[in-house]
Amino acid sequence: MIPRTDFASAWSCTNGLEIRTGNTHYIHEELPEWQDKFRLLMDLIKNSELREAYLEIKRVSGFIGGLGIDWRNKGSVNSDVLNSVINMASKWGGFRVIRYRGGHPFMDIYPGIPIDKGYAVAKLRELMEITGPIIYMGDSENDIPAMKMVEYPHWYQAQVQ
Image (cartoon, rainbow, N blue to C red):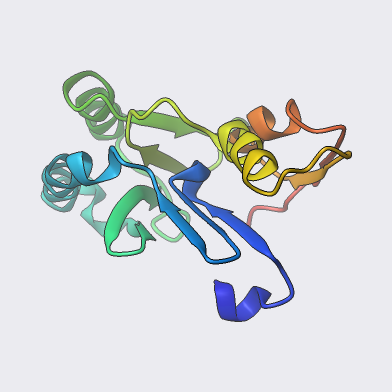
C-alpha cells in the first residue's frame, strides 16, 4: 500500500491494527495472540463448502489481521454453512464478524480486539497531534465508527460488482 500512497504522511490499516506515521510503525500488541485462532479458522473455511469462495488474508506486516470471504464469483453459498462459520468465529473464537447490509456477497472477520476505524482515526489524531478538522471518506458499515470521530464525514456509495 505504501508505494501506491507515497504522497501520504500517515496510514492506518486493517481497522487500526497497523498505524504508520513518520518513522513510527505501530502494530497492535494483541495481534500476535490471534495468529493460531486465525489459522484454525482458515482451516475450517478451507474444509467447508466455502472453500470455493475467495478467501482474502488481510496482512498486517507479518501477521494475519483479518479475513475476507467473498463469494461473488461462486454465485451463492449454503446459508447453514455460512452461519456455522460465523458462529464458530464469533462464539468460539471471539472474532468480530462484519456482514454487510444489502445482501452483499462477502463478509469480513477481524480479531476480537476492541478497536475499529474510529480507534484508528483517534490514534492518528493523537500521534500526529492534529487539533484541526479531519475529513474521512468511507463506503461501508465498517467506516461508520471513523465517521463519528471526524468533523467532515463523507459517505461514498461503492458499487458491488
